Length: 127
Image 1 (spheres, one colour):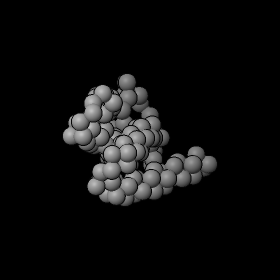
Image 2: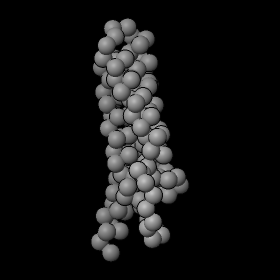
Image 3: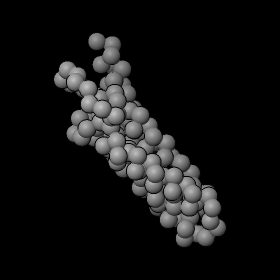
Image 4: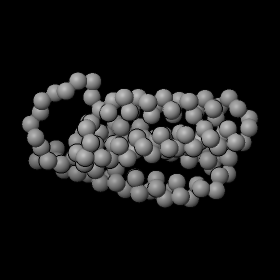
């Protein structure tokens, strides 16, 4: 899982390099699409890890007691994915892409989901 996150961050950096160092519209669109796709995969992976549907990225395995609720270790992955998606949407606004409303709709859904996860995490800590 850690390799997946590292690879996605690498693709975000490559997309940033493409967008930053080119003046062709096709390459800018490809870089923005690469950044956006990587961000959405990070966001979805973070959501699945927070719901305990896939493992959380970790340097090593630690034995912990089984608990219910949200996995707090998945929140950084969610936030990185959300930040990347917002950044890709800003790039899309700058270049006036047509699929921007779909991206904004997905971002609103993702923000609502992350907000509910944070509320559950705060409620879980207060017990």
